[in-house]
Image (tube, rainbow, N blue to C red; front, side, top):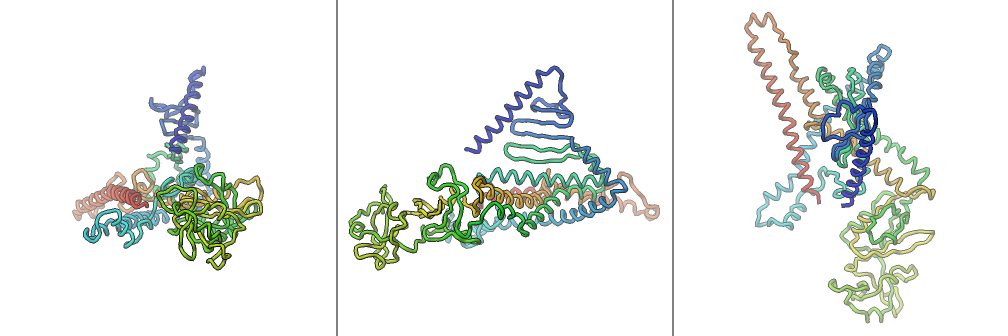
Length: 544
């Protein structure tokens, strides 16, 4: 709901700016040029010039410019000129390798698509083959199937903000995808310069919430190229994504990405975890300040460099793992009411259980569990004769968060499912060395870096799938033109073949190749589209 309101506000501002700027242009004395794309009553323009058009149509914003065309032409001339022979040779070799990587990527992408469909279908096939008497068709029956076969969540999972990843990751994901698309389009533009293919325009679009970058070429000029040159230009975009992903991985492996961390941030993962974010509607808001260093969950220390104890502890089936209890007054505990241990009774007290006798009682948890001076015990032997060793009952669902602030420790109590703390609190491993630095800067930068690697690799595979309107469909068509050589429009005849009366046979073979080319050109995208739609539906169904 909040996302819908934000999007509505953004598009209201865009349309408001369009209205006022369009009104200002209408009042000017001299008319302004609207460019070649000004036809159409449903499109509104709020800024025009000779080189740039900004087009607004409901929830679609498109900015396109020809300002960079001259620079691309300069590059094409420099590559074609004699002094640029070495540059041309290097670029040709680079993008020839990209063609090979494109072919391998197409094969791999199709293989991953088929594998993902098959993997996602396994639970449904197993459920269909399971006798109804042994496992009745119910939710519980499906849970049994999930336990007896490979987990359904181990396939390729879609990234859906608010569903498979937190909703606040959406801006970072969109920024990473947009940046990867810019890298992708640069590949098409640079490769086209090798064959002196001019660009018509370049720009970006914003549809509802999804940004995109694009570069457009004259279709007739591109189609007139030889199949290999055309396929090389098409493969250059995904190849740029692959090269960019490789560079990102190498930077990670070299540790260069931690330079900022070592200079202005301090790693405190050996002590605990830092609170860097929290849901605004969380009950912990105001009690767990941003920048707090959480050192313990109950009696479990969080000081670990490699292990994700935070997630493992809060998402486990156990309610707590308290190793020690607390010494309380024996007479007061035994005389206390047991009503708070009844799930149907609302009480300000919490349910406790005696370590030795397993007898329940009701106590105020705040003074008992938050005072660091309280005596801890493993059994009644660790307490005085007048005391009893108790600990919170599992039904109380109490979590003790020990935080370190201002040089001292204090305890905050949480009552409720532990997984809610994991969902509401965002933690990190780094504290800023200077108070002016924001807590979220490192975690956001790291998050963007991770999504950037994921986005650019995903674009490499996704764009090479032979789906309509994607590079993959055009790439496959160019490969088919290479395999089934396209006719030049002029029939060539061999005199010896004419004398041998084999012209008819040659024409028949050529027509057969043409039919196969047409069938494959239509059939591969249709089959891929069916597999892709099936894969998406199965992935959404299999999300837990």
